[in-house]
Image 1 (cartoon, one colour):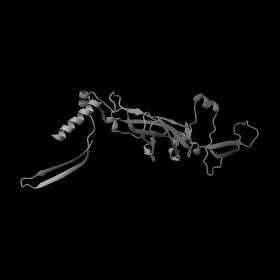
Image 2 (cartoon, one colour):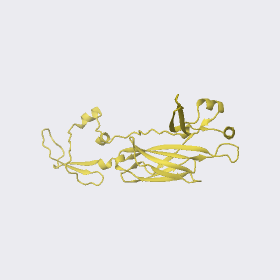
Image 3 (cartoon, helix red, strand yellow):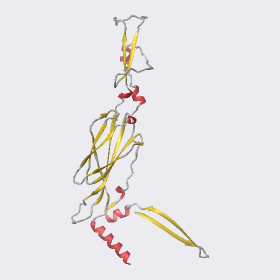
Image 4 (cartoon, helix red, strand yellow):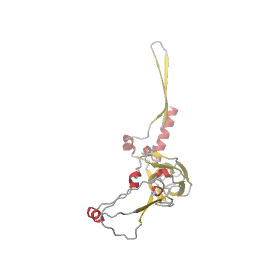
Length: 256
């Protein structure tokens, strides 16, 4: 829990000095208490996230089906693009339901991929035979990686020779027309730089050479760089008998 601490001191002449420390947080539980009380930490459940597609285009609408292990619950969705967090989305799981849908627009800045993290907080019924016992806290997390197409940066290159004869001899002069268009809408691209490589295919087949796409170099896959920290999974989960004993001890201390 959180505590506000104040303390005071006096010197030899009786002059008083005071100081304060606010919001001192003490995390719940320790190894000794776990061994003596035989209790566990609150478990972290898993959220299943089902996207409506495997690959998206910029400005597409992404729909995520969130399957929750408990309800009701409050949820949060954040987007991790190599450590850069976009605007989070809050959602709720209504009582009696086990799923909901979250929608958002795909940003061009997320090319070629990003990671969706989801978190849920709520409460569920305790596994106890005691009736009318209070519910215990619950937490769940999940993530899924989504791909965003690089097609808006892809170009179509059409090479055509003016001659009808496609067979040439050494030292022949070849006239080549090069037409560059955008892959998405086939619009012409101005001031495009083209590199033409002429090589014997037999040599390429012997060496197993393969031309890699430059898009993979300019837009490499991004890693998920967000590290999540939670407090609820560090809380001890006591049974009802221990809780009643704690209440009784607190009442005795207050009365004493």
